[in-house]
Amino acid sequence: MAERLQKFLARMGLGSRRQIEDWIRQGRITVNGVVAQLGGQVNGAENIQIDGRPVQVRPFGQRRRVLAYYKPVGEMTSRHDPEGRPTIFERLPPLRDSRWIAVGRLDLNTQGLLLLTNDGELANRLMHPSSQIEREYAVRVLGAVTPEMLKRLREGVTLEDGLARFDEVREAGGEGANHWYHVILREGRHREVRRLWESQGVMVSRLTRVRYGPVTLRRGLHPGHWDELDEAQMVELLRAVGFAPPEARPEPRHSPAVGRVWPDRPRGGRSPRR
Image (cartoon, helix red, strand yellow):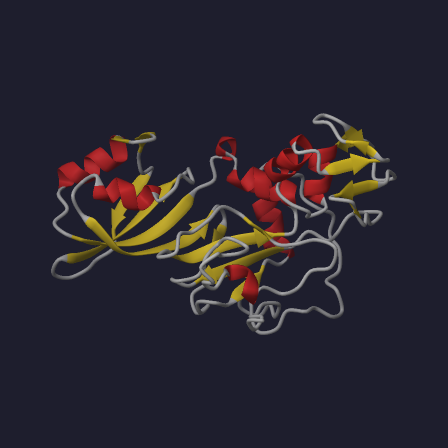
């Protein structure tokens, strides 16, 4: 079956659909020697090239994979950093004929759960506002927080890029001037959690993303390590964005992952920096 070029290449794990659309506009992709156009359809039998390099198409695509990575403070989510700071991609297991795509970003000073996948279409759905995927954060704030502030944060605050709010705010303890809260929102705007709290005159002193949709940061997972989602977790994640559940298939006999993922499911680990 034919499908749009950008969707096909995203499904092959070559980039997010939005990124591939940009490549098409820039004339970087050719199909059978002709510069590709947005809306063009392919079935995988074509000679597709990106920047003059052939795309290696497997008959049924690659096995869809998702990592739950615990990003530490001080790592960049970008693939390359001009200042030479470490990036998340230095720790990830290698892939053949595709690459890891980060589902959204976490800024330099934010830690916690970051999903990565080799399926660009899945990444696109997880990030798209229409999917309404919940993001949950544990936040430590410095300063007095009143019930009126919490009410405003739930009802909506006007920021420089529009109205923003938390779908849920709940207290999580703390002593003295530092208090912990768990907040949930369904957007991925730049520094949105920090900006919302700062609009109320309090400062975020620590921020950790603990959940993205149905995937929760595993207790006991250390910063700089990752878990790979198993079959049941993949089905739950796919359902959250409207994908049909995949057919059951046996796990590969050998996996590049080492360590532990979820209890009694050995498939996670950490790749050393290169």
